[in-house]
Amino acid sequence: MNKTEQLQCKSLDGEIQGAVTSLQNICHTLASERGWWKDPKTGNKIERNRAELLMLCVSELAEAMEADRKDLNDDHLPHRKGFEVELADCLIRIFDIAGAYDLDLSGAMLEKLKYNSQRADHKLENRAKGGKKY
Image (cartoon, rainbow, N blue to C red; front, side):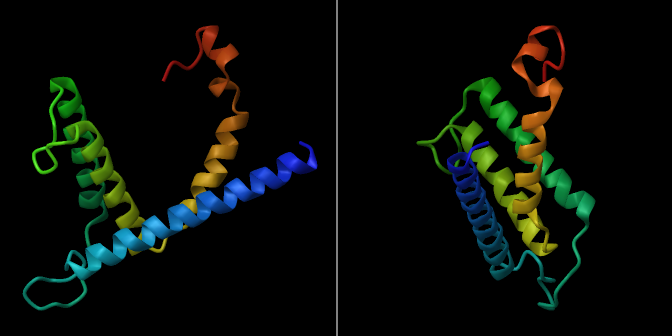
């Protein structure tokens, strides 16, 4: 990789890191302000069940699949396809969870993107030979 490519890569890394961190902070702040991390009766902070949080993400993906299968528009944003809105809902939940647990989602994402770019089973020529299809 030449110097220009290295600089472009570092710039892109910074953009990704900034964007993901911002989305994580925004989504968690909004969820917190709306009481999703507090007991509704006492207002005290609560520890949410991680398995439940993850399954809420899964349910958003299932709703996206169903909206796509039936070619449905979203109920609340009828000018948008349900598929894209449910994916957005899943991202909002993921960013909220990452913010709640102070995860380095941007760092993990950057590292995983770089790792995947070097994986043999992610290269088109290997997939064309009958390798990893999904």
